[in-house]
Length: 516
Image 1 (spheres, rainbow, N blue to C red):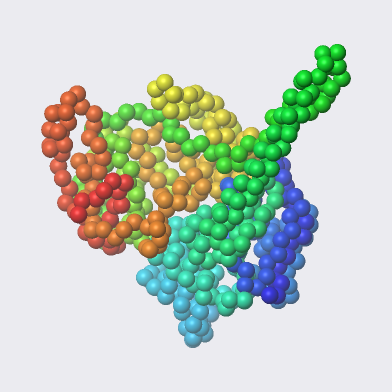
Image 2: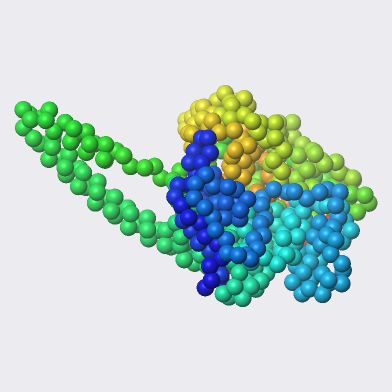
């Protein structure tokens, strides 16, 4: 296999940390490499250095003559006033791009359901991501560098993208580097996995599943070696302590060294504790959508939706890009007004929204992370009752996966995943009782909460549409007696079942069993 790209002794550092130190890598023809790691460990930085968009502070990156590298980053750089056709094709004559089978396949797979002359400003976040992907994939590249390509994509688009990347090149041609947290996608398209951690990059053969098996075996061997080392250290310390009292001062240095050897054990890297903040108790009414319809410029998006959200309810919303998922969340958060129907909210309900953009962080880009969090609240309560614990802003951020040296880092210098994690903390801090969370792909969200293509083991079964009401999907509010609880459930109105998934309707996927 011919060599395409290489990196020798890469060194990269920021004012608050060293990201890479003496990293050497190579990309050959036929390599399909998935890059994994924690937020902030340098995945996007590594991709940018290899693609030539970021200059390392040490070492060099070499590219074979004639190799073309196409890059997809996490940012949205599309012009709102441009059309879909202008953004994807540009000034290329129609007879040229229409005769190219690669371009036709990309346009049909990603943009087949979108109007060619539609303005980009009128598209949803997922539709804009599809346009950006189409613009990249219509080009002829030897290496594709993809940074979170599945962000904001629906199930169908993710499945199509995986299939396209598998057949884009022959088996021993082309190269691909992809940063993603989608485990299914990594298993589908990758034959090599790079783990970025602790200033180094560890290569593993195979996709995500093979990488996990190999890493577990490495960790087991390392744990065995470490246990043997500690046993030897303890024996050494016990022998030193059994020495004669008159000689106790002579081996003091050796005793201190042995104690340091035992105590100097690094913390587990995956030390992220996700605990919910104490919230105000909800009343009987949370948010009720009663015969709600929404239309934009006369085009219906949601039609006759009835949804009653009960206290303690956890609901995932799935659907194709443009079906109205963000519009539905906007109704709950009171950022979208219904065309018909009404939205009823409880008096104690406070709604926090995690959007697809990071507008909430823009006023704080120059501020350190510690200052931003401390400006919101001075202390935070984790847990409830006797297990409640008060934490400072710094302690809270450390539980969210931020290292102590990162607390003084300006927000603009954080990685994309760290910014997303900080934005999520913004949403949780606001005494949230009902959380409207738009699609996110940061490490804080477990893979089970993301959309996966049909057929994947974690994919939801294609059941009949379900009803969404407080009486069916969550436990009723606590009552003084069993009789009053039963009476309360009987008095709750039932909602009619929603229609099948379409651009004008929704199909909720609930955390409880749905009625058939």
